Length: 294
Image 1 (cartoon, rainbow, N blue to C red):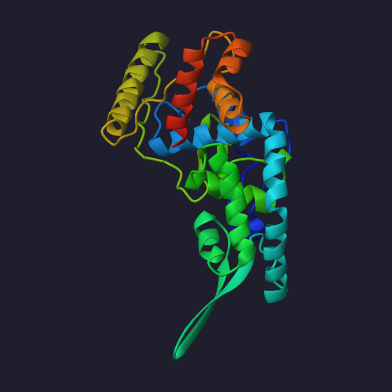
Image 2 (image 1 turned 90 degrees about the horizontal axis):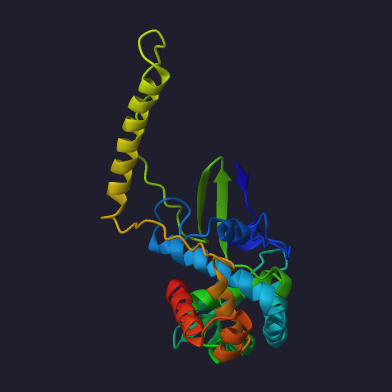
């Protein structure tokens, strides 16, 4: 079993893959599958996680200049929040900065420690601290200009800003590969495992049957078992994984088109000319990826 490099919320447990070569990273593993699931079937959550992981990887690969602008715009307010954290909790080494939120009334006052660990937490802190407000505004300006100001993207972007660099930009999640089985999910989401006992194989009696007769009987039982397992998943909203294999180009080439159009600001006509496809195909691909991401 091997656990691939991952990012995960949670103080000093958080890790970010720093290599620009993704062969043994989550993104590389997902790219190699060329489908919208980890196995025969998938789920809406897994589809989104795969798409978002590949999208973050394509952004790292293609849009370093644009990511550098985001990191530069957020560096000062983020460092101010870190300074507040160090002064407030000198012995606390959590990755996400902490502040104290103070509320009061005529006869009461409350104070609570608040970790700026996701977008919702940052929005709350922005009502109390100018540095948090500035960080929020810088992130919104960058994402809104590119039409990607989605809460899930802002969550992932904040984690990368706190923990990483433009060259280590990746989507929060974890993945485990054990022999031929793959398990994975976005940070904070459970891995999808639906147990069902497998049939026990009969013994093989070479003096009473041929090898082919024995294998045919066992394969028939295993096929019936697989069919029964898959029938349970469809009504539960877990469709078959869709293949993204192509005759030429990469399976997720439309993600690159999306990054070039939305993040880098390239016109669809220019992308079509460079990719030797029609503008309609580029437009369809970009729309498809946006639907998968959101």
